[in-house]
Image (spheres, rainbow, N blue to C red):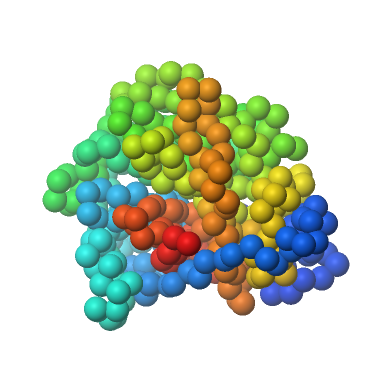
Length: 346
């Protein structure tokens, strides 16, 4: 997700201190006894080598293809002197870094991305935002300029040897934007067996009066909407569905963009409180578990998994996947730089 230079500068300034203009989000609505008392999980950063040392990769999504983690740049053709690429590292390589049985940066491999010229056929094209797989079938969301009033859900096929991911001319689905929020799109895909859910980024009470996920079958036949609870701040990615219909979303407040997302008092903060670092800084970085039910998508009884915030700038987490039963892998876009992190389950 690209933000204006002005917003980025403001965000950097806000991330380093708490002043009268950058108070912790909705702290007044958190019961005093719950301020700074919630548990937080440490993010362990995994070093990246190769092309992903550059912040210009601007990663926007994560997904598993078998035992390989696939990383989606918003603009796969960002490198002028090479092919358009998605990037991959194996689960074994990731676990070796987490378990300290190997050292050194992870060296991502290029999956050649063949868009078939889609970027030129979609008016107002502004990049790819989310990625999911069902076998060799790939699903991606496409962001367009806000004035277009819509995003797109497209399909592709990945080669079993991960040599190439090729987009298909059809099927495609139009995703009407449910609210007029600057620079907000469909940032999250939830993929299960013969089910694809597309989640809009802005679902707060003040900006989206009827939050819902767009539901499709595996061939992109539209099966309606599934109601969502109001969730403040941004939803920037989601894991796949588990066997019980549960999934997690990345929920993030990026300092400097509150004027667009207009966060209301947060019922999750009021119920569960804030962690020690999240009570002191303006950003919110957390994972929230949801579940698909016959009546719609609901919050589970698990409290949000709050991340221990960095002493540096806010981290614009744009991708999340589960890592077996151990926790989660997260990735940022270009702010503060390209980061890949592991978060253990509590």
